[in-house]
Length: 294
Length: 264
Image 1 (cartoon, rainbow over the protein chains, first blue to last red):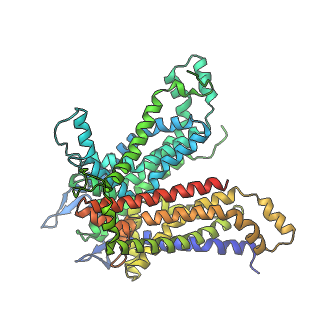
Image 2 (spheres, chains in turn orange, yellow):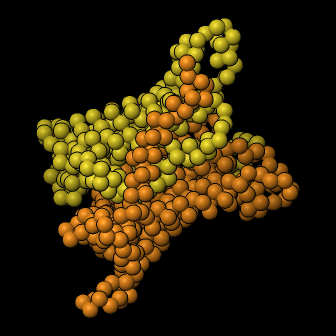
Image 3 (cartoon, rainbow over the protein chains, first blue to last red):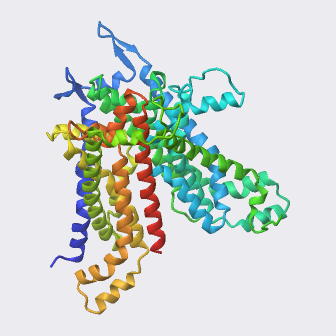
């Protein structure tokens, strides 16, 4: 007969063992590989340790082995940050009004709207980004629409630009912005808003004094949920961006493909992981602190 | 016009328009893709007439069928393994808190937090180091890992909402642990297990980045194959296979939504 606590441990073990062995251990190994010397044709030298991969990030070596400042990789990191921030801002700009509208709908229609917001999330990311190639390419629907509206009369060359990447990223992660904001507004008492108007508040005051404070936790969660996957995006910049809109994900992939520099790839992935965990820690400390007595 | 005074929506008239724009943005690309997949023209974006020929060509392509078969094998095995592990873990975690509860919850949610590309790199290095040949096995292992949290969360939520008194009543009536589980817990938990399993299945079917890294010769899944096709160029075949994937996912999600509604 197994004791009750023994049984619980047995139940929890498989999941913990699978994630521990095939996720935590690999992440540890990745950190270790980032400190190894790279092999000549890919791979690593398991017995030679070096911080070369981290030095590589900012410097490159010339023929005389001198270190020269190289900002190529920093630029890719900066671009990834910029595009991910832009993505979060765009998603917030469209997502917040939508979430507010949804929260003010009758019960039955709310569920349908939530369902409609979530459907694209369950469809293939690759396919959704491919659809944007069809829309953005020269002669595609977006260009024809702008010509028809008389806003432009030349080929736009939208595809393979940072603009295309930010459109695609916003599209990919938009539901992650709407759902948490909706969740924070869902239980809003609409009489509160009416009361504010009765007491002479205008729309701006009702928004900043009542709705925004309620929505803040949702907005924060939404920004994190959009920013984090956008920062690590690979598919969108690969399909919609050209060489000049490369992001961290593409740089990492390149180290395991053509560049054959595993330690550098591991170091980049480790840096990305550190940034993401830092962003989430800041979020958790700021917004998930248990209520304390004042 | 009748105004509902308890609903302040009429004060914010602009919201409706933005919401329409939002849904147009969300669905237009999907609709355009599906419409173009029925285009007879070889040039994938110029409409010249209705045709289902590209679907026929796609379904007659042995490589695509093989890739789809791989996707189904991977998703089925990974879903079964992940759902089983997740169900057990949820049952173990449900019986009150103990030291380490937070740590274990965090560990189970870890695959959701780590960026896919990082997981992909780490898994690739790990499989190479332990000497596992890249192929279906490595893909299935990697999928099982990231499917666990997707299966776990709905099951855990279902357990949370369950009445603990039922289990205690069963024990009072001399049901053994196993009887109580089989007759009480499992039937009540079943919807949670089903929706957790469905989520895991879709997530596995759709995965590209991790599969792309840890796959090898002979383990090409449908998304990896489609990526290769897109790289070569935009063709009506890509439109057709992409639309099929979209339609299957949407049907699947709608079905699970309706199942969830019926069970309430």
